[in-house]
Amino acid sequence: MDYAVVEAGVLVIAPKNNPHTITKYIMLTTNNKYPFFDLSEIVADNDIPFKPYKALKPIKAGNYIPDLKFLNDYTRWQSFFNGAQTHGPVSLRQFLNKPLVIAFYSRHWGQHGLDQLKQLNNIQQEIKANGGNLLIISDERTDELAKKAWENSYTLNFYHDEEKNIAQTFRVYSDHDPVWNRFSGIDVNAPLLATYIIDANKQVIYNHIDYDFLGTFDAEDVISSVYESSLITNSRKSA
Image (cartoon, rainbow, N blue to C red; front, side):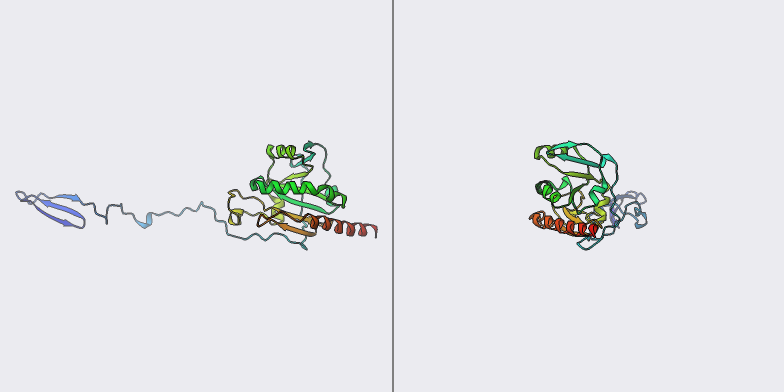
């Protein structure tokens, strides 16, 4: 009869006719069926970038935007008249010497973004009639925008800011607080659906951010804010 004994999870068998010959078999148990490893073998990956969380704090009425800069690069500007794309030089002075309505748009907001464009298109004539200008800041230039403009007969001016510098200036976009932290159903970090009015001195006189998707902005508030700011600007010029 062979003799067998278990030592630390190892089955040791010594034949009766030759007790000096020992055969060992590793016993698989629930305690040692997984390979052991030394904690010293764990190597930290220092290449993973760490981005500290910093909540968005969008610009509000009363703040100034002294570093608002637009580039003259024609590829960044896109204008539509009744759906057809127009071509021609863009005068930054024309935009900045009057109350300017600035709206941030991204196709990643889906129908909510399109609703915003529709509402802006509906009041753009009144904005101009009351002495203001309207400019939409988009985070990319796509063929889809031209298609939507044609289908909906947009008469709108767009500035494409793929680096999102303008959005960061207004603090409606940040890599440290992506929009999916606040909204479900969006998996691309895009600027908030925000609407601002700045006067000729680059002071914010109106702000609205669509946090709840119950509506974009109050059209009457926008038009009246443009009108009042235009009166103040013209009175200063005539003084």
